[in-house]
Length: 305
Image 1: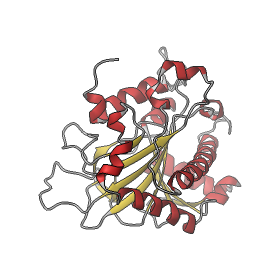
Image 2 (image 1 turned 180 degrees about the vertical axis):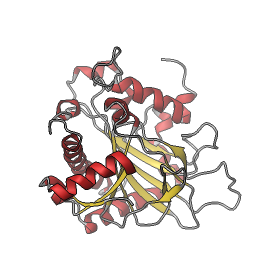
Image 3 (image 1 turned 90 degrees about the vertical axis):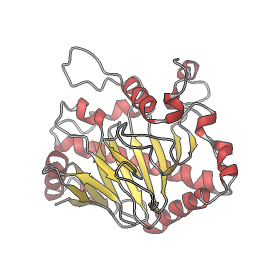
Image 4 (image 1 turned 60 degrees about the horizontal axis):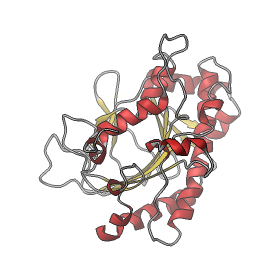
């Protein structure tokens, strides 16, 4: 059973809630949280902003096409990603934005893909709505990671220094109705694990997400508007020495369109996410770049360097 936890009780470190959090992290690999500072009406506004963007003609979306910049900020057309090399490219559309470095930040000179400049469409109110949500999602994600740190017996602020310039990526996913021609190699998004630490996932309430259970069966898991599905990524699995497991999940798609909004909460570029005491470091930025290069078709096709 997937734990459904009250965010206010997590913040208060309520013993029963913390025990359920520990169970969800250790055994289930996925959580649902509710009663966060983000209200249902606000979340509906965010979803509607993405819906307006995805309904624009492709010619207008192409102005902010990430394939034109060689980065991962802006619009990704259907078929622009392939998370599973054994499956066909995913038939969803995406819009990505992320953390931007200050103008004088010395990291800018390195031209790091994971800190690219955001691209914003000419759509009134879109940027303001999405940036406001991004800031709130960052805070909720860090608060939850602090609670998880307590649940695994670490100091509450164990992770804090690693998120001063997070490679946090906010995405809007648009899953169109599943086409009649789709085969068993066609997915909204194919089976995969997320690349970073923690994912805070909102959706419009349309079913579609499935997670792979310990018994090898796919389990439907969705939350109504205003609640959030939490799953864990590869970096957190490495960082905790396998104590937290990256959650395998997928979206096959249905006859209904679906919009989801994941916040991929990833640490600073130079964070060592190898287990404590490991002989060799694993830099978060190197891991994320490698996984992006394997996923985005425009980066697979880019010349080395």
